[in-house]
Length: 168
Image 1: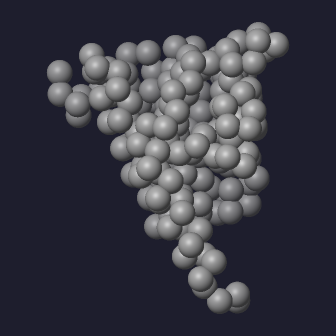
Image 2: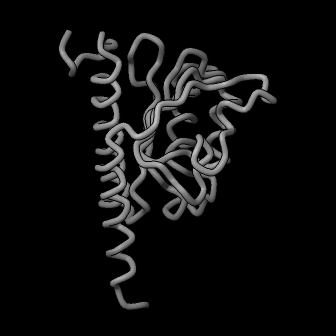
């Protein structure tokens, strides 16, 4: 099966990289269309179909919860007609924060695959490890660092450009 197909690919690493490239394209849209922090996310169902995608929209929507992960999970829930995303995988270009990690736990996601690590607020192992915490009634498999250099470079470039602009 080709990488461009909707079905899963036999090599999980190749599939994860392919899906992360999709998430990176969504992150680029956040930056280009909305001048948001470039974070993109998508949800894939157990059959390998994209059921939700999103990018940071918290500034554009004046909504502090409109992180890329939340937007993608909301759309996935609507597409599936269920608040539980059992068997689904979330791909996101930046390690989820505490809010997004707990939303993944509550949604019963099977996996979270992220790009860049977040040493300040990462809740998938960097600062907190909420997705694997045994005190929760559900744990989520985590794969981190997939195309992390590319995701990190996109974020660093955005922040560098913001810092160099004069205040308005």
